[in-house]
Length: 171
Image 1 (cartoon, helix red, strand yellow):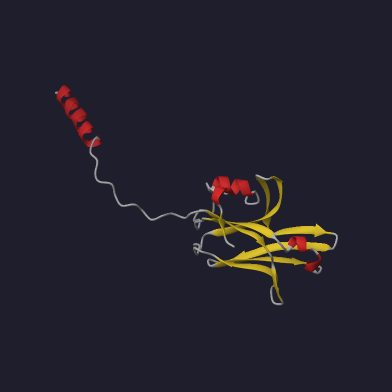
Image 2: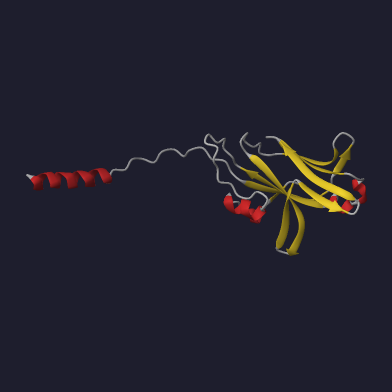
């Protein structure tokens, strides 16, 4: 009797483990990390906002997404850029120079400010290059998350599996 039950169990296990149904429909696409670049841009000036660069986002991002912005501060060689996260303060002989930004689901603005006439340091407001990284997010219910050091451009690119070999140009 034990042999018959064992036989039925083995046959049943084989029958159920080899059953396979049709593949279901593909689910919705999840959030995607993207990198955009503004190359050789000049800050515009207006009396309300001072020096700034305004840009619409396409596509519009989710409410839980965040934007990180990095400024090209220099290069080590032709293939190794040096990216500095903004906000950033640069201390010059003329005074303190600040880069800052804000963003919404639809756009972002990069600001340049300082405690002196910024026109005296055109190297900080003319021909600037910025990388804009869209980081997908989700509103946390536990309050715990594992996030990279956002001040390190390379750590962000690695953590979110971003292919920055073909960065989209915004200008």
